[in-house]
Image (tube, rainbow over all chains, first blue to last red; front, side):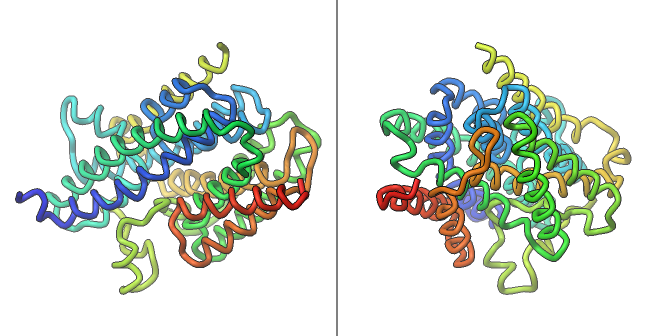
Length: 251
Length: 103
């Protein structure tokens, strides 16, 4: 009962439901992109990082090669390494917990944890959000995959439009300030220019290189682009100052 | 079959990134430049994936119902709609535009 009165656990549970639910859209889009049920489940169970999973199926749906899909997913997963470093400094997991914590290290579990100030709450928030999202995300991926397989022509249902919307929704919370918007515009332009000249999937990797070069030489905030898709403390942030302002980890 | 190989490799590499944070000395990753590259690359990749899914079909560019999906999603996001509603708005817009004959 003490656990349920923890504010971090409450936030963790509500973020689990909000994030887990959109596993439905991943599952449905994945099977209509040409992956089978178990390939879809493997991505949610083993890769477990929404952006990278959508990237993988997005490249496959666009006719890109397996290598391009893997590369896009992997480049998008780099931020999880940064989150791991922050969480390791915050929670100090030991033994086998380190390996489990690593798998649960994603935008939302990190944000739930780093949004708390008390070390015990930080720990509870991480595990509540991490485990909750893992269970619900996989459950709803399965639901979406089974439903998607019975849909027939995905274009008739506008599922290719759903993919466009999903990527924009993943990008949107990260467009805070002038520089992130500029990076997004430059990378979008680079993509459009590259599409006619290189094989499908490669324009995405070109945009990644452009973005990396900008990041290397720019002097913007060091946590730019490292925002969760669903902000666990959205209400709190709206009452206070700008979003993501108090989300910085101890690092 | 070969898709399975790339898929499993992607899973392994994703886990490797996550583990790196827990095992590499913090000093290495505390370099603000690494953190910034991870962030700008996330923005760049998501922007690129949005555009590719909206206007690319293979190696050519096309203006079809997916542009309507992009606009509908942007409107939903501007009104702070939750993720799933945004996705449904995108699907609905594309489906309706196709029904009206715009491919």
